[in-house]
Image 1 (cartoon, helix red, strand yellow):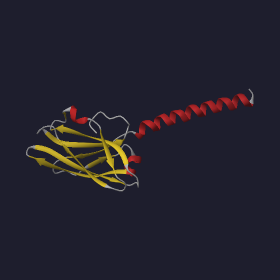
Image 2 (cartoon, one colour; image 1 turned 60 degrees about the vertical axis):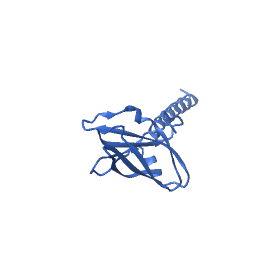
Image 3 (tube, rainbow, N blue to C red; image 1 turned 45 degrees about the horizontal axis):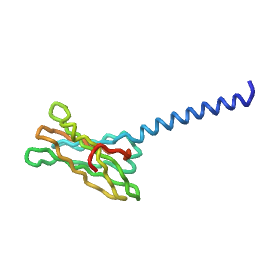
Image 4 (cartoon, rainbow, N blue to C red; image 1 turned 180 degrees about the vertical axis):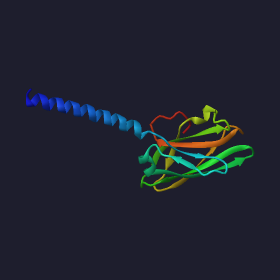
Length: 147
């Protein structure tokens, strides 16, 4: 085999590998971080996208009640010096671990100003909720909820 043939094969394999890595990293960048809140509990943060967490951190949260309807807030802290456009959504669960009202799961655009701490509020769809989870991800360009 000639050196040119081997060089061409190596180049093709490297290009395929680079393409595969780019595709995988693209999938990972839209992973959502989340924070779960429940009455009397400590907010639990789950990080699936460390890049997002270092730029816009999910920090804390708590539950409050509006009559018998569970509501909650979470804190988002920007660590970059430019405005960020992200997406977030609430999920509410009942005592048995079932999700309440899929209609509340729409991704909504969230704007976070440079180096700002922002409180994001949510309200369960009914009185059966015992915990809430807020998910935050990079903006995908397409949302399925009101902006």
